[in-house]
Length: 146
Image 1 (cartoon, rainbow, N blue to C red):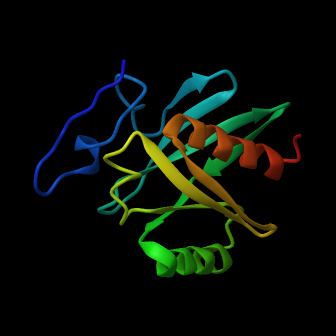
Image 2: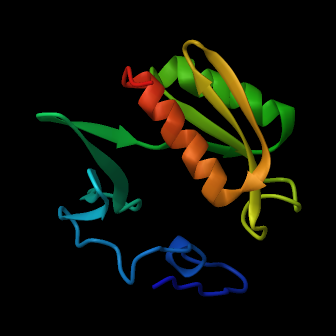
Image 3: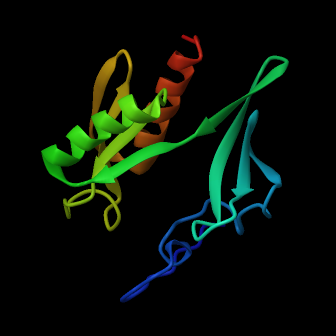
């Protein structure tokens, strides 16, 4: 079941996000969201009270994916995303331009730039589901898959 809450004014992210499940997993617990893909809601001891991690089954091991999204605005935002990749030593950052009204939060479509140490890959405007597939394809590549 998907839930969508439209909010006005100052909002908590929980009020504007779409969830493909009725509720997120409890803090510290996992939910299998697809075969071999587990959602972990890891509690944090400060204002940002949790992060979402993804555990991917890879044979006899689990790979932890912490989504490095770089939501920012314009070309300067993309430059900041490049700096995040270098400074935080992540494997993958996903940049999306939140200043545009035709993609992102209030649109069914998005447009991304996937940033890795090997380079950048532009994901042109497409559905958010297709963007998610492109991100997962990049993660598979980083894990040494096809």
